[in-house]
Length: 455
Image (cartoon, rainbow, N blue to C red; front, side):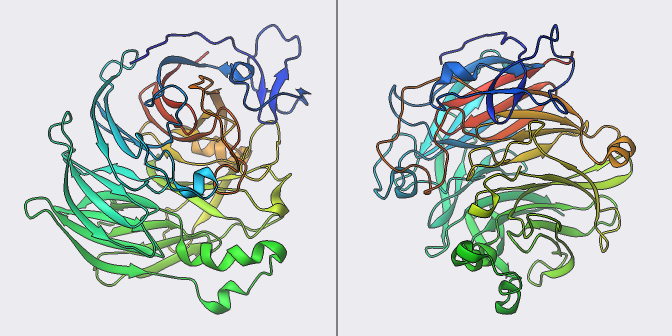
């Protein structure tokens, strides 16, 4: 593994790109509410993106041969074992051509020493993975569930050096765009977003998935509520599909709950106490300028006696080119009455530019920090450790950021990345945080280990 330890200079960043910082003698805070000077730059010039504040790079590995696209897009952590999902050369990424790729599948990395991670094993799929949050560990860490374009796969990783397929469940029309897993009352559940929320149980001894239910909320009437002009053609399909899910046995009520980021339908809270009969508990939708928003990602934590969700958007439509991508903090303490606590957007107020500067995936740590991947805006650390202050301010404090900026030499041959704007280094798609360490997947450049170093 190519391990590089670097202390990146603390420079000011707003998500419009690379900035010449004002002469402030070292940034004690991010540039907002200042209006930093925007410097035009080449998004593919990795060296132009060596920017960080309170975060330093510990190690990097492209996970691919020089000149190949790593396609690193998802991460999950169990103990010291990290799974990094990779999707190298699917048709949606290369301008219409499916190609065999060395990087379709996932890589298992030992991160016991974050400054010297070690690749232990690789699992290869013949077809590309869905390019989102598509690898997740079972509760015991012995299985990785994988979301494919036409199936969900269980991979035995009890020997990380030799991952082996254990089972698969075909979903050929809808695939498995996002997967999540949780153990509830001794049963391993797997949750898949693939034309609604699919809930499975998984029996490791029998190597068997059982589909328990499918929850779909969108209706033809609802899809017509808000005309979206030229974006309307994609609205119905995306809305029926949904996008992300978090699930758990709720520690307060004991109920088996799923929280679904359901595209334009907003956030859905679903009771799966009878997993064969999902019951919708509540819906929350953001309003205001820019609505309806594409609700993309959700994570739930229990902080300071409150049930809290952080919800991210993915902003890519023509109507949102100059709109910053919001991240919302919700108070779900009263499940039937979700309440907005705060809204975060990038400090530079940079518009999404058809996905390039959109927020993407996120997680909340047990300590109350938020690790956020932000595509060309890199990795961010946000602070939820004082919810009363967050609620009073109406926003979330920034603690640090870094732009992954290594270069494996890959460049697109033609239209890139779902016909959306992901053309640049970085294109950071996922991040997980443990203590002060962050492990990130960057689509064009690979896997990174970082350290958050509070100032």
